Image 1 (spheres, rainbow, N blue to C red):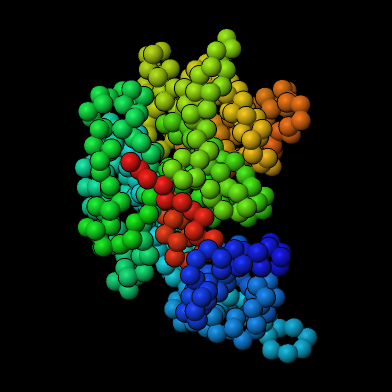
Image 2 (cartoon, rainbow, N blue to C red):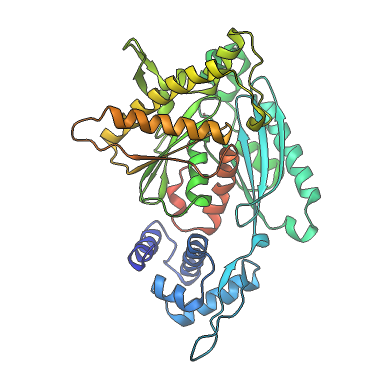
Length: 408
């Protein structure tokens, strides 16, 4: 990230609203700029931050002293040069802030507590046949209480908020979940973010689950990614996320990059949605139909799948994903696509390999196939992405680009 990029980020944040219109607002913006730089680049000295942001050395010094006093930054070992005072690198303090992330999945609920570096400190999970608002709220409030009780007293006030990652319009997935419409109809009327926030007395933010996984890749993943990239997460259903100009883009409804809803051809050339091809629900049904045990949802690492069934799913899923990626590339000129999912690492690697193979064999005139890579986060991407929502809202630059679309 060069100085021009840093300056552009600062200007973009300054134009996003009233922040910067007064001294306290500008200080909040400048603190975000410093914290964002250190998160992206690792430990940095004051002089390097001043050069990258264009802020004066005195302003940077005041900001960093304040952040250190607040427990957000920690000092490293001084680096002595040939002349002048030694340079002291400053890095994010792991205990500077904590964030809760709730993942609402078709087969389980998961709540994680992450620290300021994105490391998972605690996690709780419970399985269910299908998600309900009552069950979700009850689990979240109980899990929050348990996690808080395990935290040192001095850290409890540092919980900066909670994010929720869930499939939007859950009430419309009854058939795919194998339940009656009435079983999940309550999702249409309930606002679980408001209910949990009021009961737990913390700010709560919400995001589509696949977009949340994309946010985890953006915030906690490798920082050498291009400014624009497409993201796919293969869970019980497959979904997508989109990053434009280094910021998560979810659109006005919160459902941008809904890869699962895209229509792709089946082997006979007939259209079908990608969700019917590349979702783990499809693999799960194939296992049950063949008389095998269904997938386990506590952890994917212990899966032992019949080779023939896995082979067929991998081939159909990878072909469908390649088609969806090329359709997306026709609309949005992304340079890279990252694929992650609730699956063993070896299975993810094979899926990515096959997607790349299909993309290389069927080019479209005038459209360059994007580079396809594995995601860096893994099965917990949605929960970590949920935890990244309050982190971005409270501490990072460009936070307003993370849209909290409606769940109803």
